[in-house]
Amino acid sequence: MSDMFKIITSINEAVELIPIIENPLDQSPFIEQFGNLGDYGSMRFKKITLTDITLWISEYRMTYETVFHAEVDQPILEAHITLNNRMVQSLGKKKSSIFDDREFNVTYAPYMENKVLFPAGGAYTTFDLHPSENLLERFSVDFPFLNQFLNKKIQQKENVLQLMGHRSFLNFEMENMVRKLLEYISDPFPSKTLLTIWSMELLTAFLLRSQNNIYPKYRHHNRHTDALIHAKEIVEREAMTFDDENLFSSELALAEKVGLSIYQLRTGFQRTFGLPITQLNLEIRLQRARLLLSDGKYSVLDVALRTGYQSREGFAKAFKRYYGITPGSIRR
Image (cartoon, rainbow, N blue to C red; front, side, top):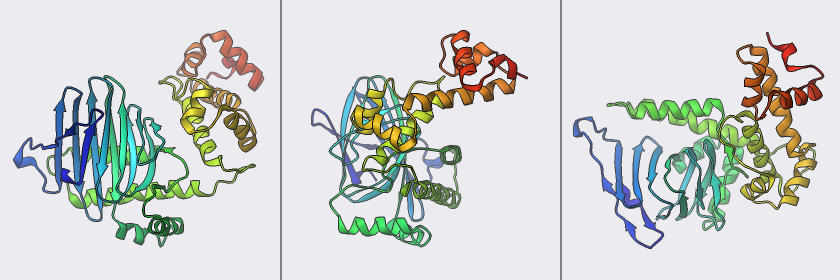
């Protein structure tokens, strides 16, 4: 049902979404597909209507840098995940945010107007989970903060609200849940009951993750703590996946991503977590290096390259300074 929202290009042209029926015999009655082709590339949406919960899978392939405005004519509460490539979205807010791979948030948006910037030549995928309000009210019995959130939604009908104070990354369990759902949806005849159960499990995982981030216990707390927690998660993720594309190239880029000045980021990070950003990044990389070395599968040079070092010598020097022993001494 594509009439619930409309998409407008940056040159103010409406994009008509056309129903897609690949094989009528394989079309499940609770799954709808629609999309569009244009000089910008293509977009394709899959809507899966379940009991008290709806899933949306959105796929975009852009031939050049493109900006779309999406307008939704009804209130939406969604758990939004960016699964492939980074994009810039406003999600109903005045200020846009960069959404990285596997990054998620839980947002309530009344009559949302969302601006999305897709960089040129990219393939983008998002996964959205829209629970009904009745379902959230039932869940609120076990999640008191959710009840507070629903009350705030009623009191501030015109405002965009986030369940979490900052965006976060999927953990391993949540990634597996999303992967399982995506694979099963592509089956010729998926079970609506199974999809509903698994979607409920994923919603529960979102709420548990959100609950753990509501009242963080850190040595220093101020109005920027939520942004600083997000910055810490980004630093940790980059340090653990240093052989992949970096999430940020400098502290200035990190500050811009989380909405702080460079001064607020550096001083707030040190006060909140007790160490500077560069030190946290270094410690995580060296801890990961020790695990890789003890596994015995990689040479010292391999481990150095996998943890962001350009030479065996530079890595060995940093490793010995931190642990007091050489990397070669702990290889099995």
